[in-house]
Length: 226
Ligand code: CTP
Ligand code: MG
Image (tube, rainbow, N blue to C red; front, side):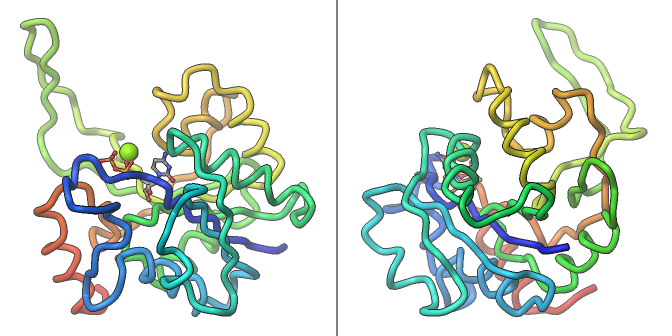
């Protein structure tokens, strides 16, 4: 089978509140999104890597390496739309059964070992797979004045990459009614009644969302696993 990487990188980083999109912030000496790009480039399992940016992105060409990466300028208003547009642009290139690994540009801790763990762990699973972490904290739900404790048994935090067959992921995203409810790719697939496989990820693969996440990511980037 062939494996491709698709990196949505068309967000504005509102919660990071930096002067520009967070995926371009320097982290561990290079732009945040370069870490994930390089992990896919160094992985021998990945046939090609695609990055989705917004049509008016002024800096992407100075950030991607000159070989092995293709920039798709078709970002949308939500992550889901960016992924959907990117997959549509790949229609002439990808076959129905090719695997696509979708990975947030804002997760710089990805490395070749995690890519390989996901691909091996998912194997020939009929639906697909994603990296995720078991919940370790006590979970509270506070809604409308009611407070309760949710058992953490069986609860996982989704990471990326999330890998699916090209055709299945396109169909799943095409069927989404409310994009605001779909914050990852697996949820669109689950909405079809399908159950992707969970493969245990690693805390180093955190999503850099808030300003304080930058230092945590840099700490992991300065160390190798475990
Ligand atoms: N993303 C995208 N297109 C969008 C929104 C998000 O490609 N319209 C990408 C981001 O660039 C990021 C990934 O999806 O790599 C995960 O999204 P998130 O962490 O939410 O990034 P932002 O949307 O940029 O941040 P915020 O939600 O704080 O604005
Ligand atoms: Mg967002």
